[in-house]
Length: 481
Image (cartoon, rainbow, N blue to C red; front, side, top):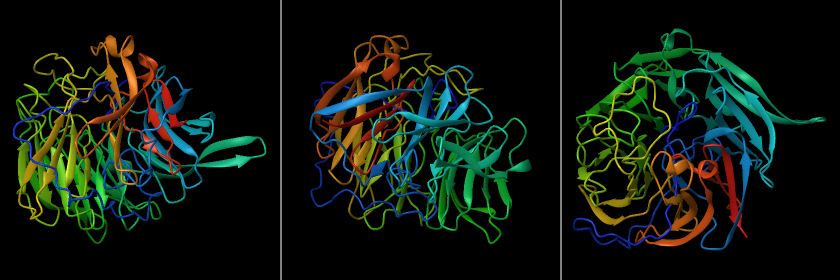
């Protein structure tokens, strides 16, 4: 999901009173279907849960760490004058965030103190397009891997010196002609062999071996506006026309295993950043966490959840309308996908402060932001899906599911939610949701207006349960009181 003022991502907010809304014939939750397992640990990334914006290279939206639970919370805000879509946490506990400054729109890496949230060091990177370079990941040496505005894949490490903490580029690999002039990287993730996969907004999909510098790529001729995902032997990329399942050839060249066109709808919807799916593909499954891959299409009036067998082909095992508690719906958020369950948030009408260059006009031109959340389960036979519940939670952030405490965490919003309201008088809350029923368990007030607006970005949980939520102007640190 892209962000707004700076280099683009896709993010989140919160709601106070949450009751379970009965949608169209929801099915009963299956008590024999626990959430998980966690996606396989990618050997090229930091530990699952805090290695990427979406938690892991499978983009499951889950974490193995507990959150705050329903306890009273305390929170602090680190003001960075930047929107911060990617927040990750290394094995040493230090927090690394990739932000884009409000003034100058410069992508900047910040190192935050895990105890106080203080900004310990920063490193500005060469600037590219407004919505390029938002997705990054933390490698197995706690280095942030990102593509800069000069189309160099860089690894940024942090070190403590006699004069304090410092960030520096420890490796830089040029992508060369693989990224055409005027194009930019929007998706980035490693595979199990250590190659780094990338996708550009113009539809180039490639791999780079940072040991040898070898870059291999293909072109789909279709736009890409979301991140990409990997599990052992497979990479998933969603363009604005189709879902691609790929593998790597002997020399690293991407090979299309299958391509599944989807309903991209008649136009871009208000609350989405491109004409097509707004979701990063997510791998999940009840066996090893990789059996299925899913996206939400852009059909009108409601998007459909599409679930495919990763080892199958382009025919979905289910295609089911979601968020049907509203007259119209759509999503710009990556889903939570775990076990046999998928959770989808509604961003229809969400007013982003900026759009990617070249984004077509939406139809209609604007709409009210209703919010909403749905849970859909794949049946035990893997032959179909059903809606378990619909809830009216008004999430302004991408929610995250804790597999440790069995709760969903997000930031919800109340009050005026128009483009002016979200940044002035809207009230933001740390919300905890029961994934079994969709009921809101607790809601804790955080603040009002622009400084707390999470712009549909996803928060990250550290091993100690502290939550770090990127916002339009910095990072909010939330912990048990």
